[in-house]
Length: 197
Image (cartoon, rainbow, N blue to C red; front, top):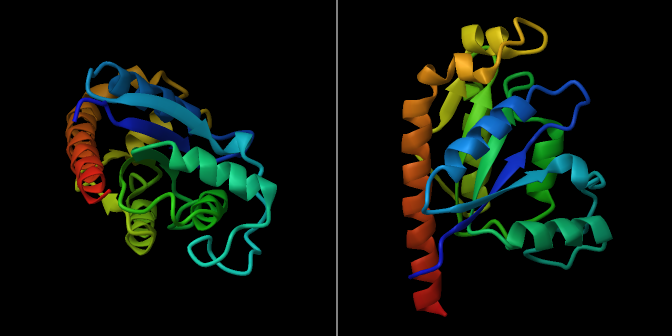
């Protein structure tokens, strides 16, 4: 297979005061330094999805919301995903959960990894995301990037607001492993889908 996997880096928070842009831009830089994937940012701010109120998931019935259909088309263009995961009350943001629910078919049999942040490095939120991913028939990488309490507060606007580069030595090894795994799974799932076609 000659085509490079096309990956969406999905920013999973829409709050005006979000921290998500810092890790998103840092992760985008790491991914773009590689030659084996094409990565684009997909910001949930650009997809004003209604709260999910369809008759069923689009696995069973077409969505009626034009925004939901536009979102499904966006998700469907990619071979894998990097989620920017903010931990809110031990889980993912409501806007990210809603975005996951608004598509089903388009997520299926595609891999994802994440860069997560929060007091526990976003670990509890990422575990919830992995459970949701299984239900959506996605493949989670084993590795992910976690920005834990000390590093989070050092770089957050609510804390020291330092550049993320000041903590990147703590992030680079896991970022490389997570991206290596994402590429492997993306190529594997792309090949499997191509063989089944």
